[in-house]
Length: 398
Image (cartoon, rainbow, N blue to C red; front, top):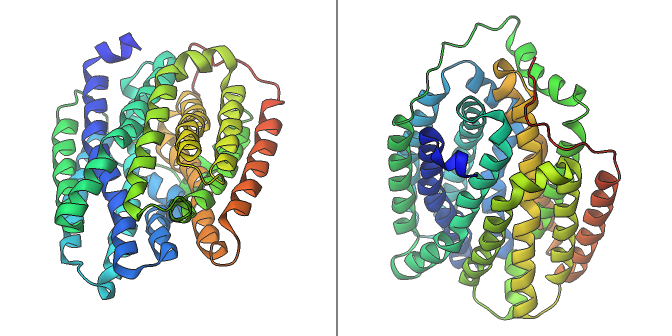
C-alpha cells in the first residue's frame, strides 16, 4: 500500500477519484431525495438509480471507445463533458420536469461507462500489476469513503438550497477532476488499428472474458450479487419509511456503508493474496447476505450495522473481479474486456432496481430482503467451494 501511495501518478489518480467521487455521491443521493420530494413516490425515486445504471447494457460497445483512442485525453474529455451536462438540472423545479433528472442521469451513466473502461485500462499501465489489488482496494476506499462525507453534505446542501445547488457542486468537481487527470505523466502510443468490423471488435472483449476460467466465475457471481443489490437499493426508501425517518435519512445509511467500504478497501490487497480471489469474493457475498436479512429488522441500530456490513461485503467481489481482469487481459483488449465485465456485473443491478421498484408495490419489503439473503448465501457457497489459487505476484499477459 505504501508503494502505491509513493507513486506520483497513482496518487494523482486517487486524488481525482476523491474529487469526482465527492460530487457524484452527493448527486446520486440528492437525485433520489429530489424525485421523492417532488412526486411523493418511493418507486419513482428508485428509478433514478435505474436511469444511472441503464447504460451499462451497452458496456461492450461503449468500452470499445477506450481501445480506439488514447485513454488520458478520453478521461479529461469525459470529465469536462459531465461538468457541462450536470448543470442542466438547475432548471428542475416541478414534478413535470422530473423526466429531465432521468435524462441527465442516463447520459451521466453512459459517459461513466466509457470513463470506467478507459480508467481501468490506464491504471493497468500506471500501476505495477503486483500492486493492482492494493491499488483497487485504495480506489474503493477513497471512492466509497466519500459516503462518509458527501451524502451528508449533499443532503444538507439539498435541504438548505435545493437540488440545483448539488448539481452545481457536482459540475465543479468534474472540472477539477479533469485538471487532475491532465497532470498525469503517462506516455501512450496511438492504439493499433483493429482488424474486422465493429461487431467483431466489440465481441472480442466478451469472448476473452467468457473463455478465461479465472474470470468467468468471479464475474457471474458478482453479477448475481449486484442483481440482489439492485433489488435492495430499490427498497431503501421503504426501509427508511419502516424506521419512521424522512427520505434524507438515506444520507446517514450511505455514510455508514461508506465507512465499511473504507475498511475493506484498505485490507483487500493482503486479503486477496491470502485467500485467493474466489474465497475473498465469496466471503464478501456472504456478509452482504447477512446485511440484507438484518435490514428487515425495524431497528435503527440493526439497520445501521447492516449498512456497515454491506459496505464491507459488496466491494469484495468487485475488487477481486476487476483486479483479475486487469492482470489477465492484453492491453489492446482491456477497455472492451473491462467494459464487458462491467456490463455483466452492473446490468443485473439495473434489472434488480426495476424489479425491486415493481415488487415494492405488491410485496412486503421485509420478505423481499429475506429472499435476497437466501440467494446471496447460495451464491457465496457455490463460489467459495470452487478450487481457488492465490493471486500471483505478476500475471503474464498474452
